[in-house]
Image (cartoon, rainbow, N blue to C red; front, side, top):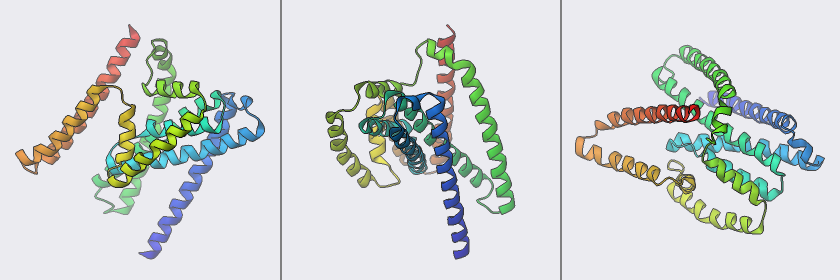
Length: 277
């Protein structure tokens, strides 16, 4: 068992170093490929590359851990925090735009892949057959890469249609407002001030609940109906087992999955319909 644990630790360390190196390479490509590098001095450019790499890496870990514990992807909230810190450091707007997109993209991909692999792990008997488990993971990775390629193609041919109709993620408005506001002592003061209650809430809730991150995410949601729907879901989760028995938990999980899928299909279809009008 100790040898297996050491081998697992070595593989984890190797994977994390590989990921960090890959993010550094992507940061370099983004900085020069988007032209953001031309707006920075050599020293500022080096600082940006280091910061973007570390921010993307930490964003991936924080979002992944939060999603594994709570089932929630606080990707945009954490990306906003890294953006605010980047503003306080003094990176130019062009670099901040690149930073926002880069960091916001890493966490969801990592967390979603973790969900997929964990689902496959459970379906394959929780490593009952190691060879079968490894082959299953390989097939899942191949499927994910195919999906990644399809996603790139779909975005490439459709993004202009949505942008021309002003259809972007709501969080983008917060990013734009933060970048336009620029660095200020007031921003730094508020960030430091509200970090304290956020940390306290996170500490009280513990790692499994991620209350601090969920609170920050909720404060960024401006649609009241979203809050009411979350409250209704929590109420149903609490009351249903008491009224219908503990066996209803499985039915609730299946229903929740269907509701998520239905919401995604409706949102996608509604967005395409509006963009095509």
